[in-house]
Length: 79
Image (cartoon, rainbow, N blue to C red):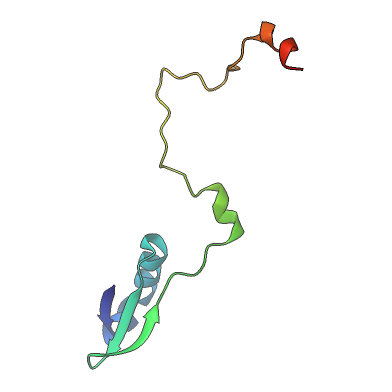
């Protein structure tokens, strides 16, 4: 966990909040070397489920993701 003095946190508050949101790593805020507060990321909202894998999966150029996996002549057999 990252530690930060209260004066430094005051000067960089918005930047630190953005970093905590991005990295999900909490920050311990100290005053005269003693912990006084902890900045932690807020729980994810329901909208997050749609982008949680964004940027983590790549599809190779030679893979066809549009065409059906099963040939058309076999479709009737599946009904």
